[in-house]
Structure formats: C-alpha cells, structure tokens
Length: 251
Length: 251
DNA sequence: CGGTACATTGAAGGGGCTCAATCCACGTGG
DNA sequence: CCACGTGGATTGAGCCCCTTCAATGTACCG
Image (cartoon, rainbow over all chains, first blue to last red):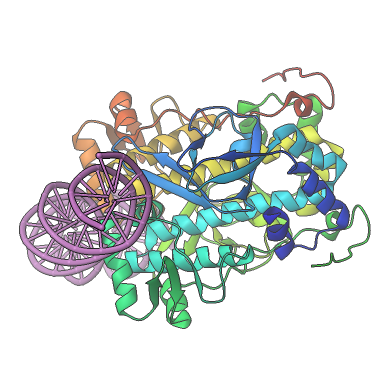
C-alpha cells in the first residue's frame, strides 16, 4: 500500500482513514510496459492510484520533442490536475509493468463529506505534486544542465526513499538518458556528458543500474537542494481532528 | 469582483455561491507597488484573493537569477499550492499597487462543509492554476524563444480577456522585458530581440504599452496555442447540484 | 536638468544542440 | 552456440541559439 505509506510518511493517518484508503484501492488492474494509460486530450472520469511500477506524464510538442512533466512512482495519485479538468492535458505512459487502482472522481470528492480529514490529506498530496512541478519549472528555467541533473537526482532519490525504493545513498536508475533529457529539457548526448562530468567530479557513480551518491554535500550545494522542507502537511487543526482524537497510527 | 467574474466565465455560479464569495472578500487591504506580499520560506495561515492589480510569484536561484512562476492577475487566488504546505515555496511581489482580500485557510476549507459545490469550484480554480504551470513548464523546457514568447503572449491575452482587461486583439503590456525574461527563462536582451522579430514578421505590434495581435493565425500556429480547451470546469453532476437546481446566474 | 528605469543594440563567447558513428549488453531464433 | 537485431550508452565534430558584457538611447519624473 504505497499510497498509505507515502501519506503516512508526512501525516499521521487515523485507523479509519487507513481503512478507507485500503478500500479505495480494492480493485486493481494491470498494464504492461510502454502502454498509454491516459491519452492527451481525452476525458476521463476517474483518477488512478499507482500501486506498483513507474509511469511518465508527458506532453508532446509539434516540433517533435516532448516534455516529461513528472515521473509517477508507486503511491502517486495520477491525473492531478486532470481530475478537475475537461480533458487530460498530458499523456500518462507506463514505464514498467504497472498495477493501477482506479478511483472515480465521485468517490474522491465524496470523501469531503464522509471523511473530511482524509480528504484534506489527499488534497495536500495534490498540493505537494504541484510543488514538485514548480521545482521542476525552476530547474528547467534557470539552472544549468549540471545543476538540473543534480537537482533531479536528489529530488528523485528523496521520493524513492519514502516508498522504500532507495537507501541512504543510492537508488535504481529507472530512466533512460533519453527520458532524463525529456524531463529536464536537454538532449540525450548532453545528458550523457553531464552525467559523466558528475562522475568525474566524484559526486556520483553509476553501477549496475544504480545511482550512488558519493558526495552528498557537494551535490546539495550544486543543486541548491534543501531537502524538501516545504512539502510537509500543514492544515488547521480543526481539520485534522474531525473524526476522532489526533492519535498517531502504529508504523 | 474579478474572482466571481473569472469563475463565472467558466462555471455557472448559483446566487448563494456569489453571496458567499462576496462575503469572503469583504475585508480588503492595499499594498503598494514593488512590495513583498508573501516571502519565500515563511509560513502563512491565510490565502489572498487578488482584487485589483498585478503580482508576480517567483523563486530566486543562488546563481542570482530568478524564475517567475506565474503572473497573478485580478481574480486570482494567490498562494496555491502554498495553502496546504508548511511554508511558502515562492515569493509574491506586487507589480502594481494592489488590493488584496485575505481568506484564512480555515474559512476556505470550511467551505467544504458549508457549501461543497462552491468549494469544488474553487478547487477547480486551483487545478487550472496547476494546468497553467504545466503549460509553462512545457514552454520553458521544449520551445524556442520565439515560440515561448508567442505562447506566453497568447496565454496572457486569454487570461486578461476573461477579466475584461483585453479586447479581441490587444492587451496592455504590463511586464518589463526583464520580467518577461524571468518568466520564460531568457535573458533580457534576447527577449528584446525576439519581440523585435515578432514585430518584423508582422505577428504583433507594440504601441503605447499595448501588445496588438496582428496575425492571430500565424501566432497560434507558431505557439501551438489551441485556446485553452482543457481549462474548463468538469465535475460530477452530484457536486454541481448540491445546494439547489443548476440554474444559470444572470451576467 | 539630472536621475532613474527601461528599451535597444552590438560584439564576442559558450553551453548545449544536431548529426552521426561506434560501442555494448542483452535477448532471440536458427 | 553463434549470428543477428535491438535498445540504449558513449563519444566526436561543428554549429547556432542564446548569454554575457557593455554601451547607447529614450521616456518620465521630481
């Protein structure tokens, strides 16, 4: 239950809420590698929780290139902000074999009545997705290739750690250099050269498809990465305490 | 009441909802030109509706440059996704003299109980902000300077039109070229040259601080601008009809 | 009338792109 | 078991878009 794990990493979840979340993810479906899950321009009336596997959300541009908006990892709620919009504004494609659980928009929104405290936590999750995109915008707009890649690696590492896919200093390299280029607005050859430079400078190594962070401090400085202090749950207590007392949940 | 105007442009608002919105914006405050309204890293417990004037939301990068996330125009709800986060992830600065109306997060969230249909409309508004940022990301990541500027001008024109600040073919140029550069990840001289090229190609003219669109079709093509079809309200009827029947409101 | 803010233009350089070749690991079928 | 195909990584050469640095122009304002 990576969604629960991810939320709980930031916010104490009440037993009730966990039960509801479990329930929401009851019917799952599988999608093979390299398939479209959501297609740009089409309308959907349910969102998806990514239970297993990885996806990319991307937009094509007429000149032939594409921009990857975001890498979806287990526990992510796909399709924000699409949930509220007329039609999907980007495609979602499976990067690996994937297990999804769909949640209709009606279900999602009715949470505001049945369990507002949980709803607020889910909307917090949307906010932190938006925050991620803003970070991404800053990356692409105002950082050099070296800074961008460093920043992306650190951010991705942080996200993977929360769901148990990374240890303190390393994580699996799930993206091809081509995709990494589409994420960061760079060409594939330049991604390659920049990664090499990071290696030569002793900041990272890459072995067996894993990225190993060799010099955390230098990377943090280079990327101006301050952990992710802003991405933390913060709502009026009135909303955290609704269903019962604000007890912690067992880990 | 630009917020009401903006929402109503997309979504029929019920009389009740309009009354509540009016009420929310009752106490206003003024801020002079070039002042900080929200400062990066600080925590706030209320959001703002921008009633009059223009603001920029931006992030500084250690190398001295900054990235403008978004231009706030009258009717915008500032501080998303900040509302849910521990601390502001970007600064908000007044571009002109400004009239704000603050809405505490508690007030905002309690709408989900007191008037869920309105709440869903406000959250739709957040979604469309997020959509704007995604468009922006695509711009900066994968479009040439010419395409970027064209796209920005069209998008900005569309937004200004909704609140009555633009006519069919022209709108006031509210940004300096320096700011435009910070929006689009370009240097000021290059913004200048690119604008000149757009002029020389007969796509736009700039006179008396107004941008005039001379060749709409060519601009649309260049920028791959398709109006903003995805930014349209779309929610299960269950949520649109809660307080009464789905009657239109008088204009 | 000098000061400030912004627009404009030029020259030179570099970061990142394009195009293209090569290499490597892996899987698959004969 | 090997030949081959395929997807991805790596590397090189040349170029161009955009940046940097710097100077000049221009409007407005106290």
